[in-house]
Length: 224
Image 1: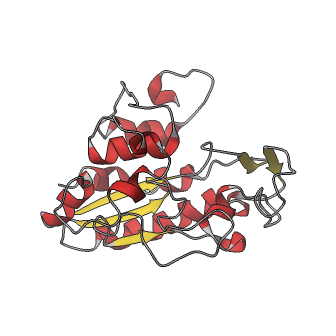
Image 2: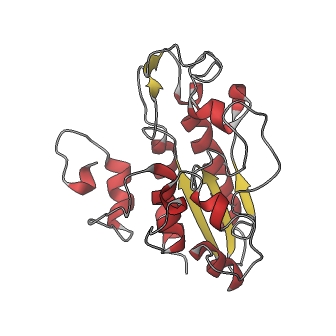
């Protein structure tokens, strides 16, 4: 992105948002695996045990604990101190915030039940978060095709032909609603690409453009 000094990629709306926000330029991970890294960021704990370097680290160490018991996520602190907390996308290990296996129907058990007032995800034609995570334009996924697929695709569709476009639409609608309430909020948005498969529309408008072009977005990021 341009705000990070890239001269080849033109991201004027994201750059405008960055200019009006706090931009972090030094990022580190405690462990080079997906779920474990997210667990470390969310809890502030350096991974020191076998379970803490596994993808299901949060499920095994946080999910079943009562509110206020350690380890807990920093999101719980926001919620406990009066913030309305909303998560959209793959914030923890689960693609949509719920606990179930890749090839199962979505459960009703949240991965971080004490963190979120709302945990949102639109899986669209893929039906579940994990299918969307591994999803192709036609509604199939790497899971339903038993992994016999290429790891990339450039579909002939608009942004909403892939799940990140649906996520951008959902997030735009939600932040408009949050902007109208008096309660302070903590809002996290995570897109799936390029976490796993590299899926995008052929003529990419980049789905985040819908978010960054929202006239009030930069102000909302600064809301106390």
